Image (cartoon, each protein chain N blue to C red):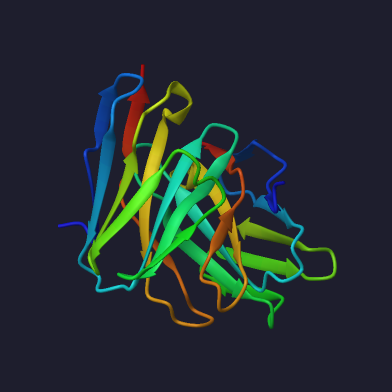
Length: 114
Length: 112
């Protein structure tokens, strides 16, 4: 089984619908992240969380919200999806070791908003 | 404002030759840098990292060079292999923030 699991892997929805992307991890890491990938724009940070009670906005948090339900679970919600939120979304975790910190990514969730 | 930039969207290299991927950053507080490789339909995977206390780090065919004064890092792949064909992202972080900013990526194609 993958260390970082994202569901769903693919989703097509309509403008205005609420969408939740889920992420779970078995690595025991405290830090979890949500990124989106767009052609020509690379990976941009949406939200990140360092523990269950800690949530931080990233570079592009408008239109998104997150929930850290447990150490192992971090979900991303689009309250009212719009077409420019069509993208590939990645969840990632990290251990938080100073000087040797590495992100481990899930396989991605492709979201299409019509 | 893009704090981490990869100015070459794509690069083609012959098998066996050197691939050089470049990355520039603007935030002088960044002191930890990573390179990731991404294949289609997969998540990015970690390749190599470098801390600002070093100017070079090697791992097999992969070497990362850091020029702090120029705010520039590069990834060298020698020799390049067809399996190296992927999108490469550089990422930067300020120690203690655990917040990683990624570049826009460079698509490398290694020609057999």
